[in-house]
Length: 266
Ligand code: DGL
Image (cartoon, rainbow, N blue to C red):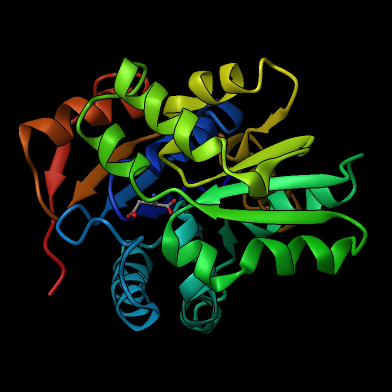
């Protein structure tokens, strides 16, 4: 039986489109409702309480839209609001996939000895990556580093320029990351500067592609629950504030032109 209800995907802005794009590739028959909370961006410098409040409002909206699963396509919301989101979704028996747990699980069973994580301040402050990875494998050394300047650099259109290269070089030269064999891009914006990051390490450090892992984790759940769709998909992209810059960025993040619709929650 086919279940054509959409997948709800959300982020603080357009970064989560890197996850939506991968879901579209891995699950081409699934409809997607995306919500980017651009009015409240960035989440990365906010308190857990505020991140939880915004995330709960968006989850309510996605539940009202009849979504059959929710993907938290934001590391900051995944690390600070997962319990609250799960609680709401469970009331409606809707599965939730966050962007951290499936990645932590996957890397824990790989051949890594020392891993680096780069992410927003709120994600690093939560210590979530270290906790999750070491829950599955306590022998891996995990170093988390806050790299807050990277989101505005990407948002302002400076990815793959000398500016992003310099900021990446300064951050990644941090002593904490010495000797790592792999690095997780712990922010959904960072796939846009993956090239600079790989180049900094001369291709010798494995860069983990989180959106790919997350899309496959979602697929496993849909298969297990027998709620896959075989229909022609529909995509809706809502944001809480629209600017020309967002429209341009959305194209970059999703890989093709999309129409952003304004949606104010409360
Ligand atoms: N996309 C968010 C994340 O993955 C970062 C952007 C923000 O700070 O809002 O953590």
